[in-house]
Length: 220
Image (cartoon, rainbow, N blue to C red; front, top):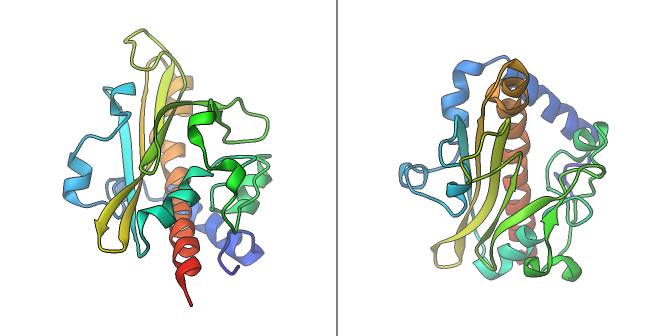
């Protein structure tokens, strides 16, 4: 499938987008809410309480011209060793993530209630699935004592949601909230200076990948 995140030229383009984002921190305010409406940006989302006082957060969104029942299966199978992330596969594997983007629905990875966590990379521990709302969304948490108020170097939550947007269409949204305490090390690990440009490019590609797959499945 063209645009599936595997092509060499496609991944070179993704790398150049990351470089541009790294060089333009003054555009961060626009990037953190790419595709999201004012109402979507201002509302609370499931899992927000896991990081109640984020030092930075993002909400990326896209409209998919397909009903929720046909979009959710692509979201449900997200993860390493599952359906992948529909993003720049070669860039992810360049750092050892071991990702393979699916181009079809995988029945064995549809029941999130039977999964304790999802890995982002092959050798990384699975992040706990803290919130699961079948058909609507999930939230992963990681980094520390999330939601407890106890000191921790950093904490983060990431959720993907499917929201009805009208007859036969939905909004797919990706939500990340991050906080940290401590010195330079924690700031570099959890702060937006490196994470935000990289996650923006990969996240946007993921949303476009979901849209491409779900809409292509409906094409005659």
